[in-house]
Length: 183
Image 1 (cartoon, rainbow, N blue to C red):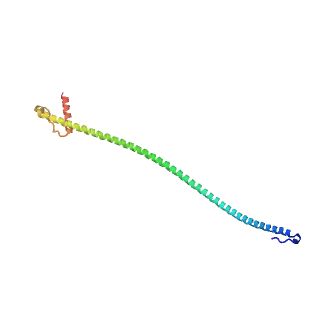
Image 2 (cartoon, rainbow, N blue to C red):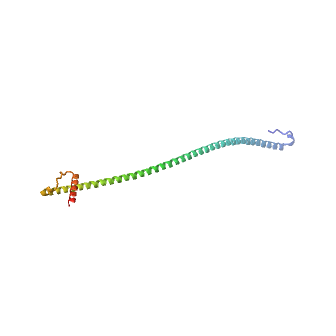
Image 3 (cartoon, rainbow, N blue to C red):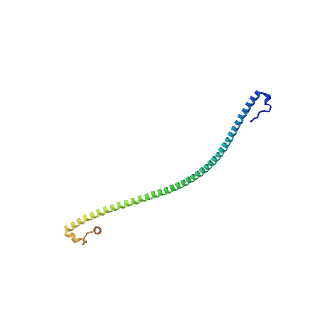
């Protein structure tokens, strides 16, 4: 605060009013200065705090970026491993498909061969049955001829009783050979 000037009585009342006004302005200026200093200190404090906060946030961001990069690298490695595994599985599946196709082809060949054998067996059975029926008819016819003429019975040699188609076939074959050579 300002004190009274030493020669205050010389200047009069006007000076005193100016002096009081200056003193009031000076007081206001000091208060404004104090407020400005306080505000400046608070702003500096806030600025320092914000600076520390920014540094902390930048550290956290850098750490998160590093973590994301590590995670990305891990995912890329996992992706590469999965692609390799997928390729291996595809190759394995191709081999299995080829093996299955070969086995199906072989199975179809076996089934075709079986069908041919079954059909051949059926043909042979039908032929055998036809031969047996023909032999039976020949035997019946031969029995009728043998019973009908007694002279024919003395000319032909004695034949064993016929019950089996194989015996009948062999007998007929022998008879045909005799007839062939006798003519």
